[in-house]
Structures are given as C-alpha cells and as structure tokens.
Amino acid sequence: MQNTFSTQANGSLPVGSVISYAGDLSVPANRQSLAAAGWLVCDGTSYSQSEYPSLYAAIGAANGGNATSFNVPDLRDRFIRGRNGQTPNGDPDAGSRVAAAPGGATGNNVGSLQSAATALPTSNVLTVATSGTHTHTVSHLTSDMHEAWCGSTYSMARWSAPADTDTDGAHSHTLSGYDSATIPVNTALYFVIKASEPQTANGSTPAGVLAGFAGALTVPADFWLNCDGMSYGTTRFPNLNAMISYNYGGDGVSVFNVPDLRGNFLRGTNHSTGRDPDASKRHEANTGGAIGDATGSAQGYATGKPANLQAGSAGAHTHNIAKVPHDDHHAAWGASGPAAYNCMEWTDATTTSTANGDHTHSIIGGDKETRPANVYLDLLIANDNLGSAPPIGSILAIGADTTNFSNLAILLEMGWLPCNGGKLSKSDPKYAALYAVIGDTYGSVPLQFMLPDLRGYFVAGAGGQSKTGTVLQHSTTGAPVVPITTSTDGNHLHSIPNIPTDTHTIDVVAGVDLAENNPTATPTSQDGSHTHTLSGGDSESRPMNVYVDYVIRYA
Image 1 (tube, rainbow, N blue to C red):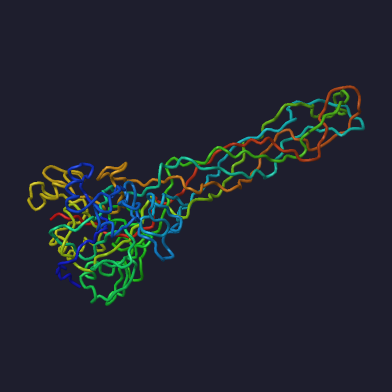
Image 2: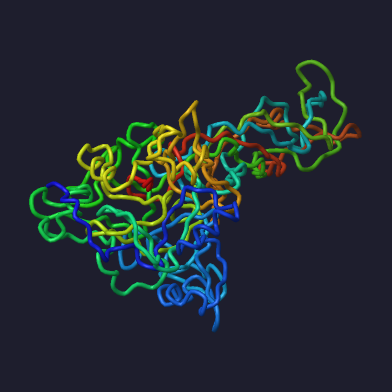
C-alpha cells in the first residue's frame, strides 16, 4: 500500500506530547527559542497553572504539583517507559512505582517514577567457578610422637595417617563489583514537551510517528491512537498502514496492528550495526509481526555481567573430624622395640588441614527484571499524515522501516531524515536550518556534519549527567535492590593429618602426657574464608523493548 501523502490540516502533536530534541538545550538562547515555539524542556521545572493553562489542562499534576503550580516531567538521566495499563506481560513492579515529585502520580499511572533494577541473567546464567580453596585448623594434633610401653589399662591415641573431614561446610557469598547503575546502550537527547500551539502551523509529520503523552489520558486526541497493540482494518487508516505495514502484527492482507508499547521501552532498530548483540533472536511483538533485526520486533530484558563482579571472601564455616584427641593421660615411659608403640604426645598446638575445598554455588536473588530508571508516559501513534510539525531538530520515533525506499521517499518529501548517522553538506541551504540547531554535536568530517545515529540504541534524557549527543556504547549493570548472592551450599571436604585411627593399651606409670583416644567427632575451626570467580551473564544489560526507527526534522 502506498502513502498518499495527503495531510490533515488540523492534525498536530497535541499539547502535552513529549518528544526528543537534537539541539543543545543547555544553551539558554536555544531554550528560549524553543519556548517561543511552544516547547519546554522536560527537566521537572514547576510552572504556574496560569502561565501554561493548556499544558496544565492536558497533564495536570501527574508529574508533581500543588494547588497553584504543576511540574513538567523530569526526564534527565531517565528513560521513557510506556505505561503498563492492564497488560499482564509488562512491568512487574507497576504497582510500586513512586511519585517523581511531591503531588505526582504513583503506581500504574502516567508520571510515576521507577528506579533501576537488576535481575538474574535470562539465557546465560551466572555460574560460580569450582574454586574456593582454603584451609582449616584443628586443635590438639601434633606431628610429634612418643614410644609408650605396651601394658594394660588405658586406651591411648595411636599414631596414624591423614583422614578426611565430613562434607559439611554449607555457606554463601555476597557479590560485589557492580557498576554504578543499570543503563542500556544509549544516546543522550533532550526530551521536550509541547506546552502550547504555535500561532502558525508549519511543516508536516508522517503517519506512524510515536509520541509520549505526559498526562492522564482517557481518549487520544484526533489523529492519534494508543500504542496498545490493537488491530485495525487497512482501509481505515491507509496512510498509517502504508508506513508501518505489518511490522507490529497483522494478517498481511487486510488487518494490521499498532505497536503494543505498554510496559515497554523503545530501542532504535539495529539495522546491522552490531549494537544489539541479540538482534537476530528478537521475536514478533504480535502474531504476524516482524522478527530478528527488523523494525517492530520485540525483545525481553537481559542482564550482562559487570566486568568487576566477584564473590565476596566471606564464607567461614566448620567441618567435623572424627577421633581428634580432646583429653590427655599421664602414661609410662616406654621402651624401644616391639614392646613399644608410637602414640600421640598431647599438645595444645593446632594443625592445618590440606588446602582443598573446591566447590561451587548456584546464584540466587535479584530483582524481577532488568531496567534503567524511567518515567511512565502513554505512548501514541499518529494514524495519518499531519499538517504541522514540531520544531526543526525534533526527533520522533516512527513505526516504519526507514530503510524501505518508498517510506524514505515520503519522509524526505515531508522534511524528515532517518537518524542513521548520515553526513550532510554544511553549505547546502536545504540543511542550513538543521545545522544551525545541531551543529557538529553528532560528529563531522570536512565540509559535512552528521545526523544522530540511533540505530540499536535507547534514548536517555540529557541535561543531567549526560550532555546532548553523548553515547554509552557498553551497557552497565548496577547492584539490585534484592541482593544477588550465592546459595548456602558448597559442601566439600578436607584432609587432616595425624588423626588417630587406632588405639593401644598402656600401663599407667609416671611418664609423659599422651593423647587419649576420642571416639567422637570434633569440629574444625570456623575458618575457610575464600572467594570464587564468576562467569556467565547475558550479552548486554537492557530492559524489555520494541524496535522503532527514529527520524529528525530538517525542513
């Protein structure tokens, strides 16, 4: 189906929409220019209800506020997550979300905030190496001996060879060496919110673009649909179907699905960049949808192993060892030869076990999923081409495959370019307005500037610790709220030298103190501190996500 490229004169991004912006809004002049166009930075600022009545009417106090003021979302260093709603397979912690600012929404509502979490890996489990060598000490053992005379009366501990402990020693370890936070690969961009309608509409926006909405939403605005996975007839929204095809599901003939982004994060389609190591394993988001490295495919969360993750050196425990002497007896001096026996001389010294104890543990604990810090928004999709557009330099997710030639032709005609790192001439008047906004932020070569490259990346909010355009090329894995530890197993044994295994009866006459035989078990010292190396982990840390492409307005 071909996009007819007709536009809806009244169609626009509704007030309260949240999108990305490629310009550097740390520069006051740039902020002022954007504000004059009716857009504000999503930095949590509080505004008077009377200053932006339309925006307050749209989003209320979902992001914080009081009787006279309200907050815009604070998306600095945070990610957008589609509100979970009633889907059973989305956010497992939806009910425990907190207010992003005083007076804001909590729980399964737009505006609520959620901290990062780290679950156990899903496909390549963490394993503990079968190391853990350590020793224990045992009291009243000696390497000395004495020849005692053969007589009658007392059973004394006779000299012996090494013996093994029992196989107790269950213990656990804590894990350390996590990164500072759980963050997927990403590019930092400012998030901005539409605060008012411009006096004069300009530009156009293609069907299939996605926008967040920062307030409680009962019914989407005209020309917009909820991203809830619903199916529609292809003739009802022909331009939308032409752009997104059956990427998100459908029968391939007369019915197509819109994306289901409830509980999901957005990720730029990999498009063979190698930034998504599991691109080929992605599954369809709905029946009939795209799989693999294709726009519309879905992916569950994963947890990569931090480079410095290690098991703690705690793990003290004891073992029982049979027939360790615990008493002494005064026995006669013996004689040499066949009438004498080698018995153990009593001592208060200790003997160290062999350095054995190799064993392993299973890994337990962790949160319910792996995710970065995020704020809920309702995610919407434009059901037709719109007769207005956000400012030049704005970035929108789109459910279309921008590598498709017919889609690309429509995008270019409407003033949009794919965010694929392409190079544009600095001197070409067609791109002058865009270059004035983004400059060389995303790279440059002689006489050319580069577009943002969002293929394979998530989008993180700039304006906090990250500057516009900075890229995190390797995901990080922070410590979970529910600690990940080893299980309390690890049974193993040690060999203890000089353990009595036989006795001999001798006369009681004035002489030396010999070790009296002990038929019961004796615990070793509570030593055994050791560590293990860890292996495993998924190929990256990421939240559950759906592929989209990104486009930037240039004209």
